[in-house]
Each structure stands twice: as structure tokens, then as C-alpha cells.
Image (tube, rainbow, N blue to C red; front, side):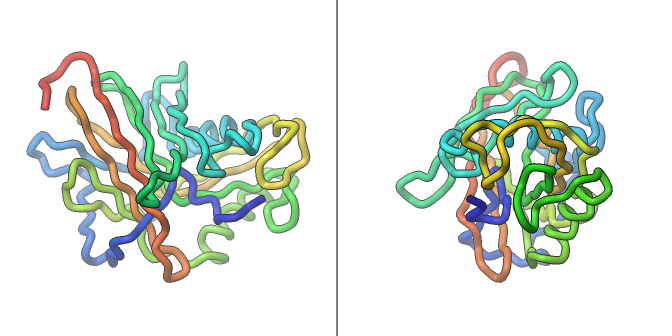
Length: 241
């Protein structure tokens, strides 16, 4: 059942932060701290290709193990040869946050998928569409016309949040293929299907060896969503924390 508007990888918010207060620091601070940047070309994959891969994998999972249901703690391998790491969902903790942990090698690209949606040939009602053009229009219209997004921010290691609710961070996938499980998410029809996905995504660069915490927050329809917190354990070369 579609109980939340696809805010996957959990979009967020307890601290309401207007876009003007969260300055766009997408190019990083230049002082060696991790940077949050648009996912234009990540290890040879476009942002659209990566959000499509993210959805293809997640839509194929049974409902009881799906990140869309808040019960998964998955670190996905996306893109060409699985080079890009991406957290998916997390589990609700005692504080009401969606929280998860991913291990990652120094220098490996990391993609964060925030408020997003898909439309497919297998889902009911407002999320059903048949052709690539219809699926694209359906997914984009849902995110830009049918829900009102006020803010989506991402912060690494307590730094000032970056506002990613911006066209620079918006990506739309080509038409992809997936196979919905026998117990599918979103009341879909089990079996093969086509889909198009869209959403606000960001690449996280420059996490050195050690522990890092990414906090994502969003405000939709005037309401803050539950926080999404990812703990990264970065291993391999580079200087420690």
C-alpha cells in the first residue's frame, strides 16, 4: 500500500528549515569537508540512470522487505558494474528517525535518493502509465504538481544543510524494467513491468576514512517528514577522522 508519497530513503524533517536558510553549498566549502553535489555523471552513469537503477532494485523486493515500508536497511550497488553505493530506506528507531548504516570504501561514489516517485505499467490508479512518455509525465507531475514540497536538505557531519530542492538536483530516469515480487509493493501486479522514476538526488563526495553521518530532512504539504539518518563507515586509504 502506498502510505507515503514515495519519499524514499527517507525524506525528513523535524527541524523545519526554509530554503533561504539552507544556503546552497553544492560545490563544497573548499576546506576538505565532504561536499553535496548534483549527480550529473557518477562513475559513468547519469543521475537519471542511477535513480532508475535504484527503483528497479527496490520495486522488485517483496513488500515486507522493501525500503518503501520502513523495514529495510539496504546499501545498494548502482550504475555501471555496481560502482555507486546508495543507502535505501532504513528502519524506524526509538526516536522516530529512519536510520541505517552503510560501509563504503574511500573514494567510492555515494548517491542519496530523496523525495521521489515512479509510475509503472503494473501499479494501480494514479501511478499507472503504459508508455515511456506517459510514465515520465506521471512521475514528474506527481512530484511537481500533486504534492507541495517546501524544502529538502542534506547535511554531512553537522555542516550547514544544503538545499537540494532545486532543478540542479532533479533527475528523471529513462524507461526501465523491473519484476514486481509475488507480494509486491504499492499494490502492483506481480511480474515484469516497465517504469519511469524521478526525484531529487545528490552525490556525496569527499568522505575520508572514518565515521560520517548524513542527515536528510524534508517538508512536504506543510509537514516535516521523519528524519533520515545514514551512518557511513568509510574504510581504506585516506586520512582518518
